[in-house]
Length: 177
Image 1 (tube, rainbow, N blue to C red):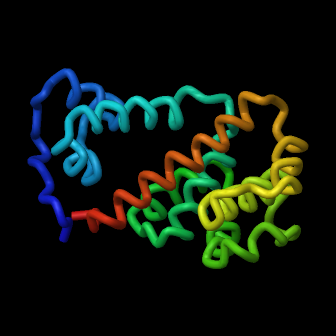
Image 2 (cartoon, rainbow, N blue to C red):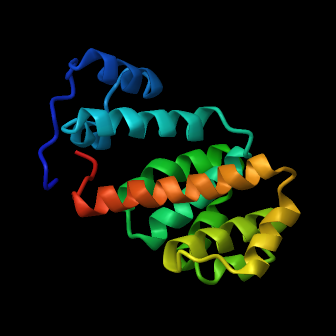
């Protein structure tokens, strides 16, 4: 049960904020939307970043979804992992890779399941989530596998944004209805 009640699924106002969220979600409002819309201006910003992260970046979808699932697992945000595991699979991730995320701390060393870009993504997700500070070796590994500064910033931004999302989900007890 959420700590702040879900707004109605048919919520329409404020239209200038609700309509873009519905558009990004394919016409519906999900549980997180129905909570953050209690703070409409916050919801507007949340949606703008989510739109950019999910639909407007050059970062490969598989790395994006891997980072999101890793952050969700590290922060015990079950809703986030449940929502993004199918997206990771759709982007080319395997069931074995998802299972390996049960231990995100060990996953970056798993050369059998993860390639260099995936391992760097996992290590960056781990360090940004657990330590905030990112070690030089980790950052160098990320730079070595991503072709541009743009993708480096996109990956760091994705991890940072989904740390915020997971913390909101967990603090407010947002879950599937």
